[in-house]
Image (tube, rainbow, N blue to C red; front, side, top):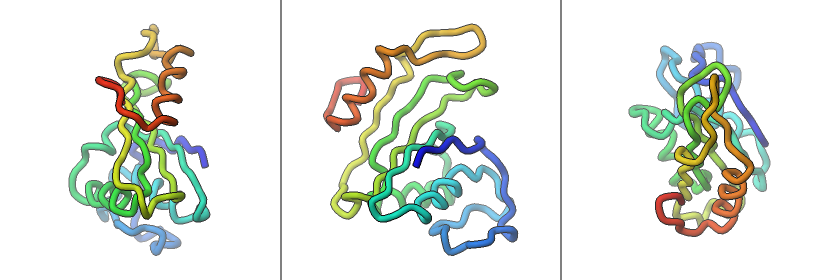
Length: 153
């Protein structure tokens, strides 16, 4: 599954049709539903499912229930990798983004999360920044190898 949900969209808890999909219920006021999207996607894909979703970088740092949701992803081995992206990469937002790679295959045995930080490798643009082909060519092998690359992965 590949997804790019709206960043920081609000939701109303009472309007949730299938609350059982959410292992960690986020605040009643419904601010920052980013990890609600991730929980929903995890709940609906198969046991051999994989997910790559674009999220605001803040999903890595927010506290409270969002910290609990991250903990749920890590404890259950679903979060395979985090790819930090440069700011201003997406049209209409200057905030840095990331890609969360979730994988149910091997989740039981997964005991680590791969972090790839690409925020220093990009081409600066007028209205938005760009990942160059050589930047992407570095991300993919780093993810596939899962290895340690100093100051990068």
